[in-house]
Length: 335
Ligand code: NAD
Image 1 (tube, rainbow, N blue to C red):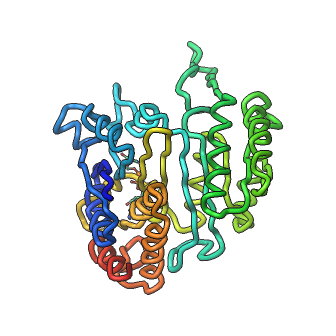
Image 2 (image 1 turned 45 degrees about the vertical axis):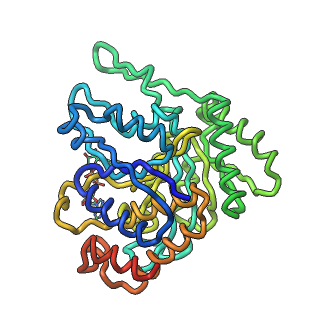
Image 3 (image 1 turned 120 degrees about the horizontal axis):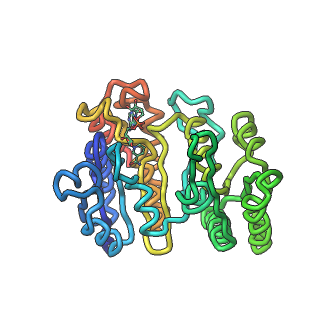
């Protein structure tokens, strides 16, 4: 059976890491077909818009997209393409695994294996109700949390735990201070948790959670939280295990899912063949999990880990003298 996915090669190092990733996927022979679509600066130059209708249509039809980082030009009139994609497809779950990998410059070269599930559409990032007083002295921001939004993200976290054999979900909140928003999230999470007696559930206030993550990250399995806290925590977790070159993310909705690297377009190294393709490759592994190919996802992760262990062909960010192509070739040899 073949599955067509939308492929967005992106800007900066995007095309380099995407070409490497597609070569690895081709070598795995997992039955994927690619429909290429433009977004970002490339799309602006070719089609006069950052997110052409044809790209949206491709994602809508295929329901799965693998996306490289995109440049949103700074300035009036351009809203973030990534935020726009989240809104268009109601991609409510941002799922970011953080796992220790060997031979990285990480503080935790072993022991960390957790997933942050961040609510992606509500909270402090609704983009409404922001104001600055005329004298510029007072700023106000509205947050919105709904029972429906909280319920579906917490349910996603528990279902993910069941599906992937994880044992514990930690609900992260600040309900002691943010009594309305975080309070509703926490109460809803408690109700949903009752439906999953097979999964341990604990609660943690966000400030304590940050300290615990730095001191004892091995205690976490799945973290579920609201938008702003999830944004910060997931980057903290990426930092625990070796940084941006190894951090993938998925944006999951009911009708579409987009898989990506967490890092940006890295303009400082674009076009030099130095980019580490691992983050996007790990995003592709999340995609294979989502496409009900967990054995293939594991096969890809294992090949990446062995290549890191053997320390050959690594890109300069990991202390190696290889390049994007040699790194991908080394992974292909170990599939
Ligand atoms: P960045 O992630 O692009 O780069 C930060 C640093 O990490 C740079 O030194 C870069 O060389 C390095 N780096 C990043 N990815 C790497 C990789 N795969 N291999 C080796 N080194 C890597 O962040 P930035 O410089 O703040 O942003 C650059 C551009 O990317 C901006 O235009 C921003 O809007 C965009 N961006 C896009 C996305 C996305 O589309 N998902 C996410 C973040 C930033």
